[in-house]
Length: 294
Image 1 (cartoon, rainbow, N blue to C red):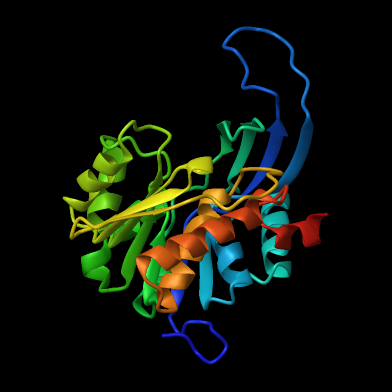
Image 2: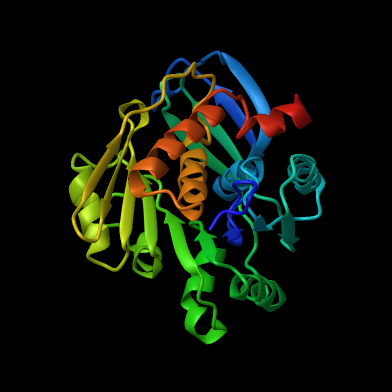
């Protein structure tokens, strides 16, 4: 339930990637052959799907915290400093390297993500620390990562019972890596990049356990399907698109915030669509990072 300020009293723990990214916008993604292209723009910034959700939840004044594997190196300090300055409650757990991506983007939302560095495996002390946080959570946003997978595999023994929300991103319905995330989730989000039938994709997820599936469709808006078979749709909110990076994370954060504040599925979809415009209007994951990095 929300408090008198409109903020829910729920505690949300977000677990997953926070990275230092190099975003390069091109007119189109490169062809698979040797050639030269010129970038429209280039920016170094905070990345990671979990960082994106945490930034939006911080702006929405949702009681949330982010747990991520971040090294004590230059890129890691950039990530930690930027997120802290943006108001994110961050728990940075030890890693031998900070996650780094180079993302090739187009103005139409196409993206090629090159993983330059990935975090090292979480140690036992990190797992115990995150599991302790999860025991006190109402909602656990477990993003796709080896850390997230390990936490889900250990869930019964670790004895945490938070509702699990998972962002499957460009799920195709058959990826074996995604299976444990789907079956553990109460709510799943995805986009329609790899399906011609998003309703069937959502239905296939619901048959494996979740109570609700949500699929974002870019300029086409978003749809949702619950376990009873009820369908919901929302149009995308009109906006000037500066950069599409992080729009899905913003949508999920907006939906989650509305849901925790007592909104129904239709209203939560509308809040998600509104929140997505905030990311779409920024060169960074969120305007809070604009204020920090410029």
